[in-house]
Every structure is written in structure tokens, then in C-alpha cells.
Length: 470
Image (cartoon, one colour):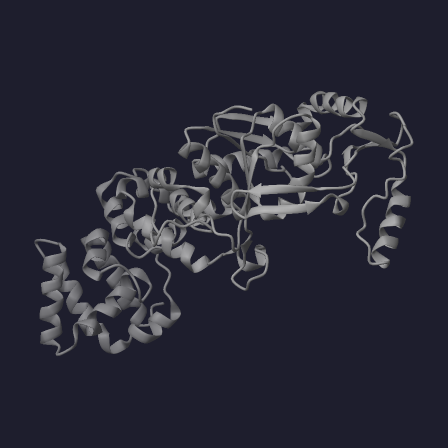
């Protein structure tokens, strides 16, 4: 086996990449990078009914978006059938595997009987000593040692012992020659010289079988590390009902890859009290000894807060490019993402937005010809008694030689004093008139970005609305 660290991420292309799989990929990628090793991608596509090219494409796209680029692969198990069959032949010829002709119906009957009698529903070894050769409908089974134990020296959990009497003679090749997961994964890890297998602890029960296969082939198994599962906020296994999305769905909701990476690395790994990690820091600090032995809990609010942090940290010019697709989906076309007015608009919502999608929704009012009024905001603030103040404001703005935040704030304060109103009693109706909402970036900042002509136009529109010209 290679002395250089080599890890792998082996998704099954039967669905999109979700949080659990992405965290497994991230831990493997970080471990390889930390040790100056190799990270490999392979697709376990032997489930021919459910495997789809669209899932292969989607998983690759998600990994690329997260920045988890692979050094080798992608490999596909269905392109490696001859390799599995060669190793199967070797195990059979050495007496370490045997053919079984028990029909599926009989096996199911035996399974049900064992369960009914309170026994473990494992294969009873009917064909173990029959000396059968290959033939139609026959599977190849591994001859699991009948006595003894296999100890998994897990890098996270420590030593875990498995009694061979609890294991059965598991299938290596199906009747059609397609390998089972247990067999293919061992041959892949062996021939691809994988040194470390980092995966979810739902695979722990598979590990003794895989170690026995390595030993039967005269090979040293890789080192194993089983990471506890990700649970939902309620403590049950994480699923869609907890609001957990696929990785590409998070992208499409406006999450940044660096935020999702940071969130995933903290699901079951820690480094003191540090919460925010750059990619370079993750690579430098990642170590399996810091992976928790207990399950992590998914917290969507924490993920949103982390994403908001990364949005605030993102350079405005880059953020401007990233928000454009989300504006486009709202019907807003931005011909030049580097135009000063557009950059100012991005800057104005940057401290408030938690996602790029939210950011686009917050910014939309800047760029549309007709704003949409929130009916509650209108009822609360666009009342007839404010009309004289708004009319005066329009006249004053039209006569301003300069139009900037400082000038506008002075104008509003003077008007408030003259009309004996609190500043907010003028500001909120104006905010609704200009944005359609009660919440927006700073009002004078908004007016400066909209520009004098648009501000006057929208204030006149609001006055018309007030006077019944809806």
C-alpha cells in the first residue's frame, strides 16, 4: 500500500449530493490536503436501476461548487467489472469463496423464520461445503471464518470488536456477475491504494467484512474512521423534513460555498472555540483526533447566520457578480455589474442580507419602474395627513442644487422641525413611497442611490395614491 495518504469519496449516483455526503467528501478532502496526499472520486454505480447520469453530473457540479476538486477519477464501478470478476475468481480458486444456488424465495423464507425465532437472519451456509461451480442463478459468497473476532481499530471510536458468529457468508457476486457493495468497495480501495477510509458510522458494521476480505486477499486494509451521523434539530436522522436541502439547492437559495464549507466542517469537528475558518485554516488544522464521537445536530438558523457573515466579508465587486442571477430571476436585468450605482446598491443591502436570494429581493426596488406596495405599510404610513409634507418635500428636492445623503438629511431635519414632527414620522412614509416597504437600507442612502429624478417620480406617485388615484 502507498505510504502517501490517499482518501476517496465514493457516492452512489442515485440522488443529489446532500449535507451528509458533502461533509464526508469535505473531511476526506481536508485530510488528504492536510497530509499533502491524494483525494479520489469514484462513483459506485452498480445499482443499475437507480443510477442516473444526471446524478453523476449533479454530484460533480456540487463538489466543484464547494471547491472540493479531486486529484484522481472519477472512476465508475460499472467500467471495472473485469477487475472484480478476476479477484472473485482468485478467491474461489483459493477456497475462500463458494457458489450458492439457494433461490431468493428460500432465503427470504429462512430469514423470516430466523426473525420469528429471535435469531439473527443470516445465511445458514447450506451451500458452503457443496463444492458448486459457477452456474445460472448462482451467487458467489465469501467464506467468513466461523470462529474468532475481527477488531476494527477505528481512528475516531477506538477499537470495536466483531464476533465472526455475528457475520454471515455475504454475497460477493450476484448471478449476473455484478459485484455487491461489500466486494466492489474492497477491490476498489485495494487497487486504488486507498490509505484512509473516512465515512459515516452507518458503515461501521460493514467494516469487519471488508477487513476479512482484505486479509483473504493477502492485503493490508486501509485505516478506518467512522464519523457520527448528522441529526435533525429534533434529534432524529437528518432528512428533508428538517429543511435540509441538496447542496445545489443551497447554492440556488443563495448560500455561498465558503459558508456551507465552514458550516459542514463544524458539524462534528472542532478546534477550540473557533467558529469561522478559511479554507487554508481548515486544511492546516483538520485532524481526525478532533472529530466528535457524538452525533452533530443540523441548525438551519446557524447556517443562515454563518452565510450572512460571509456575505458581509465578501468583496462588493464579487458580490455584485454573484447576486446578478438572483436579480435576473426576479425580472431585473443588470447590464454592467461594475456600474457605481449598482455597486452602491449592493453595498447598501450587504450588512442586512442572509442569502444572495434575500439580497436580490431587498435590492429589487432600486431597479424596477413600478414598485410593489406592501398593503400593511401603506395603511400604516401613507395617510392623508402626511400629503402636505410630501408635497413640500417634492418641491424642496426639485429645487436642490446638490443631491446627496448629507443634503437630504439636513432637508428632512428642517422639515421635521418646521412641521413639528419627529424625523421618523416623515422618514417612514417616504421609505414606503420609495421602496414599497417599511424596512430598507438607510433612507438617505436609498435616496442617493435611486437618484433625484426617480425619488421625485416615486414621491409624486405616492401622492397620487394618497389622493385616490390608485
